[in-house]
Length: 110
Image (cartoon, one colour):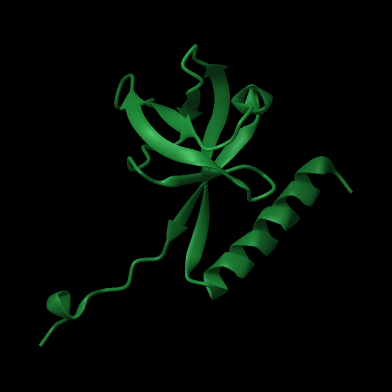
């Protein structure tokens, strides 16, 4: 089987697993650089929310979105790492771990 098919099957399996738990996995982007202050600069596919949890391909939490920089159409996310050696994440794909929002009673129709 091709690598593309294998990665699609893996992503689909993870989506099913997280949807059962009220969570969803969204691709953040690729790590481009580790700053001297050990923050990760990620070329974001979509604009993430500051404070969102960031995980790697093994679903290990690697940090949180600390800041967004660059132009609005193609943003970069600055991730404050929660791991000891953020250099190991250079050129790796990172993901956002999001919780599915449920409508509050305040916004329900009457």
